[in-house]
Length: 319
Image (cartoon, rainbow, N blue to C red; front, side, top):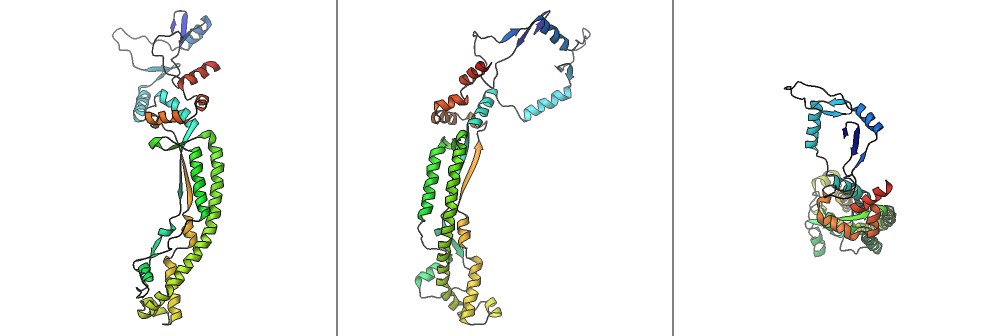
């Protein structure tokens, strides 16, 4: 503000650091300009456009020494309506929260092999066996493996993953689990070690599963071979001699088309992680903010400048 040869420079509180004062206080919010500063600033002001007494004053904004056109103002206004800016207080918190913590989803997709079933090829006839166990197994779909126990090495991997989750990922209600960004390097290092153990476990498990799968196929081939000979499918009649060896070969070929391999079964066993930063919308959730304040140590909160009064004190100290 300039009046004659006097001037003052005024600024509101930095909202990205602290809120505006709610009442009168002892703090100063303006400084007086020197005579030289007043002269320089006055020279930067645009010349005053004189209009007639009854002539309307045009509506425009001034930036520096150039006028802003009405078209530009209209475009900016429309843009602000489409994408309104964040509130300054929440914008500050969003930046600080995003630098301090992030959400992490950590899951293990794994051992459901014992429930795996496959449909028998339609090219193979239904069997007529006196073995009830075989008939039950092949009635509608083939149960790949009987109930099998989760290997010890895989149980250890699962336990280690759960320990990692408890150590680094803190639940904050329905929003999920958060982790301090400063701890991410340590988290990634431990997670990589667990993933390496899982890869080694999968290799061993694949060999064991393939042996078990081969045993399942060997157990059902004889019954299916007899069924093929008793009721030859069209493709078998047209391409194979009607012998027991040929029928067994045909059965194995058809089973191979639908039977899973051990490598395919263990390929689905993996650790999934997904990172997500704090958003503006999350900070409107009072429960989330309260939980974060409770679970993060006070010394970390103070060092992160998350608290408004701490941030303001730090800026003041720097100035």
